[in-house]
Structures are given as C-alpha cells and as structure tokens.
Image 1 (cartoon, rainbow, N blue to C red):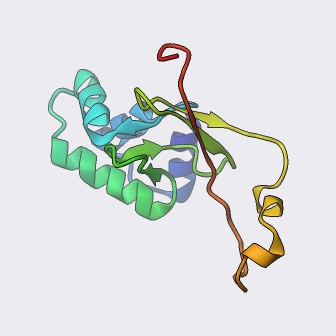
Image 2 (cartoon, rainbow, N blue to C red):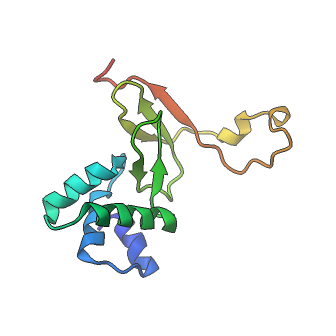
Length: 136
C-alpha cells in the first residue's frame, strides 16, 4: 500500500473505489501528474471514473494537505503526493519533467537577515531548473 493510501486511511478518509484509484495513481516518488494524466491513468484502472470526480478528488486531497499542487512556468498544475516529505523540485526547462530532490543544508540559512525585510521566514520553496538528460 502506498504512503498516500496509508495516510488517507489513518485520517479516516472515506475510501470509495474512485478515490482509491486516484490515490493509487498518485502513489510513488517523483510523481507530478497533471489532472488529465491522473484521469487517463485512473480510466485505465476504472473505466467509469468521471473527469469531474478526478478533479474533485484532487481538490479534496490538496485541501487536506495530503497532496501539493504545483505550477511551474505557466504549465498545467501538477499534483505531488509527497506532501509530508521535505523536498525541492528539479524541473526540465524544455520538457517539464519534475524530479524530487533533497539537497543537504537549510534553504532558509541562505537568505541573509538583511534581505528578509523584517519577515519572519518559516518556509522556502526552491525550484532548480535545467535540462534533463533526454533534452540535453
């Protein structure tokens, strides 16, 4: 069973067959699918699942904090199930593939106090960009 499914069960989230399929499609590391990609993969497992059900389920998962909604460079929103594992993203500037990365060090420590403008900084979202091996 995936980490996402385990977390949802622990929360007592009502696990209908449609919700389960969406959660199963999102399972794994380096998963950053668009809603349409989630729908296409869900249909392959459960042909009667509606696009609206997929969108509603993704919205619920984001609202619960179990999935993170990503938007990179104006491309379609993507959904990351690794919401509880600290990580940043590596994005290919050409094809848009996304990989989870876990660099060492504290990204908050890089921002000098003089550049914080009085903000109490609690979180840093770092995105690394470049070309993947296939596009390079």
